Every structure is written in structure tokens, then in C-alpha cells.
Length: 212
Image (cartoon, rainbow, N blue to C red; front, side, top):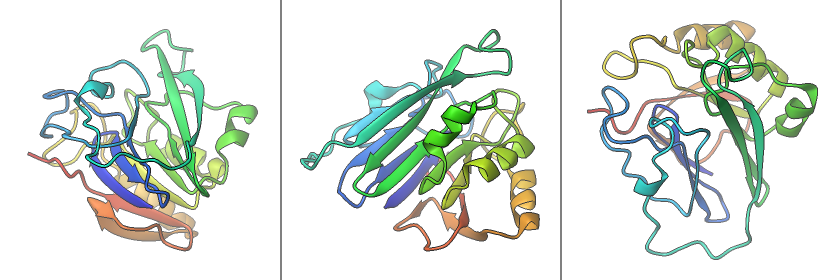
């Protein structure tokens, strides 16, 4: 499985089957410090309708489209805030399984999960989870939720850095420190892309590909 972190909450995943999927492409100019997402993928999934997660029309199809078996996709309806969507509306968690690999993109999750929802995503191969707070869960909530989901690999997203992201959201440092203190995951600086997931439990620290 190849993983590319475009930036913010946007990823391109290429499964071992050859299927490529883009999650949450952002609109031009919607995320400070990031250039156009400029994504290419067979399929696109958006967690909600905000511009920084929903520019599906900008994603181009590959020159050679995927012709393998259709993936298994499940959309889990959740909320963008802690008051059942009263502040910011709904949010989709998207589970995509192609071949034997399963990826879960949490979108802008802002609420806790039910036991039933948790059971559907528990033990996934790759978890993409927001950590920046304000609009989503923060670092500590993400750490607690990650422990309950227990993925093989996890990538924090929707955080701010020195030259990118929204001022009102935090960096990922607290999340990384919590994972480090737990001591049950290898911490890997993966850059903007990684060709395959590690064999053991890991935290992949990925940097946006599209920094201005």
C-alpha cells in the first residue's frame, strides 16, 4: 500500500490491488500554506461539504484506470462536533477495503463513537485521524480513540505546522508525545509518501506534499 499525504486531510492511497483512492481533496486557497491538491485517483471520498474537504471535481482520473475487483466501502455517519452536529453539521468516517487492506479516514470527526461504530473500524490496517482540535477532536481525544481502534498504522492529519494550516488548530506534537509515552508503536518519519506500511504497529509522521 502506497500512502501520499497531500496535506490537511487529503491523502492518496494506492492499494496493492492497484486501486487508487483520494480522501478529502481541498479546494484551491482553502487551506493556508498549501498549494492546489492536484490529485489523481480512481475514486474520491469526501467526509463532508466544507471547502477544505470537498473539492472532488478537481481530482483527475488516471490515464490507465483501475479494472480490478470493486472495493468494499462503508460510510459511517457521525458528527463534526460534540453536540450532534448543531455547530458544524455531520461527518462521514470512510472505510475502504481493497484486497486484504483496509483504510479508515475519520474525516473531521468531532464526537465520540458508539460501540457499534467502533467495532466496524477496529483493527484496520491504516487509520487517518485528525488531531488539531477546535474543528475536530484534539490530540488527547485522538490518542484515546486510536487506542480503542488499535490500527496497525496511524497517521495524524488536520494539524497546523510552521507554514501551513489554520491558526486556531494545534500541531501534532502532543499526539506524538502521548504515543511515544505509551511505547507500543514505532515512530517513523515518513516524509510526504511511503511505499508500504511497516510490519509492526507504527505511527507515521507525514508532511504535506503541497506546501507553498
